Image 1 (cartoon, rainbow, N blue to C red):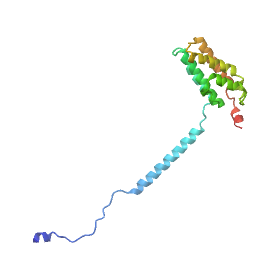
Image 2: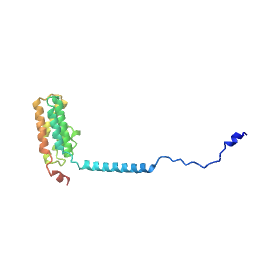
Image 3: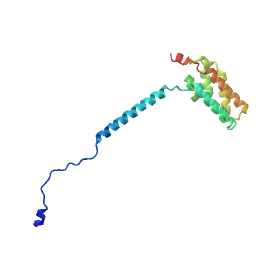
Image 4: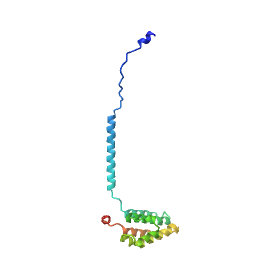
Length: 178
């Protein structure tokens, strides 16, 4: 052995404790605060959203009919008639809870007239108007006959009349829920 090598030997020291530099406590508190904030915001927005009053079925239907009227000059009358029938069927489903969009016009009118279901009088009393609109719309939709502009205006007017006659009156919603 070389004497130079022996002089390099130093005494053994204990382990050196290194600080990690990562203090996890502030991160944990921050994560919990963020989670609490997110939970509070979700609760607030859900409550606010549920407290909003949904537009009644007749308002939505009348707004959609107004959109159809705006397209009288730009769209084909077949498309407008089909859209009008779809609007009426959706309105009936929303307002009276009848699966109108899934039934043919004949099935739907027969269901209204057969008396097997207890239906509101405002619906059964306006069956003729509804039948007229749906049959004229079906002719345009399935037979692809182009109704004149006046006929489309009549269909839209009859659809509007049906919605106005069958819309829920103020205070009627509470009575129907009972």
